[in-house]
Length: 310
Image (cartoon, rainbow, N blue to C red; front, side, top):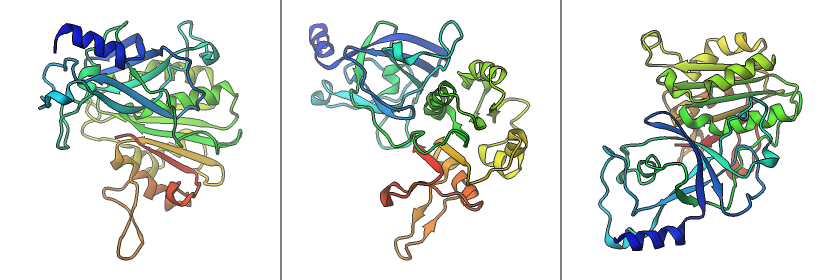
């Protein structure tokens, strides 16, 4: 494509601009995107799409694509949960009524286990502040705080960038003065992968009813005795740190991240029974203790809510 053709495609396809870009390290970024249009009303926990043209360059070292000429003028799109830094630049609780941007928490995917190489993140990681891109106008999703009552205990359990929607929901709970206990646990490989760690530590200092539990699996001091989200529950450590039992009658649990952590059961086609995956996931652990997982297809609302992020 000629530079003129690319410039015209960008004018035609893009409707937003990178307002701020933070890279905790080379494979992780927090990006704020300001659309050309007024933001649609939405709820914390929901998602929208980001996109860049197939004509854009790819991050060095990412798996190569074999695109046909007709595909070069199309957008590569992917849905991302909306994140939130919770505090503003002055360290105060963010006032989203005066915010005209959305924040996203993204990890670079260099290769994919699927048939096709990753299309979007190798392009997103070459963005700079001020660059143009596509932002979906529709914001949607069932992963919200709708069922939570003011005195309920709320647990956010995630892996990696799966904590993005949890951060936005945490901001909303703090903003509305939620009275019940709130805990967030996030499992990553290295401490450097916890891009919001300092914010969570500050929130624990300010809000006595908030607890943040970061878990790492590949640091020198943790790689030989890894603790995953599942272990945090089965060992009783989560309840000990929380200072109370996990009571299904007054607790809501939100799960986002690695499907192996979530452990969503499937229906056996022959018997119709629900079959839990292996290894043991959080859903099976909690359902054994009396929790009920959402079943959107049957319109069953429970107290374990999940977002299939990967």
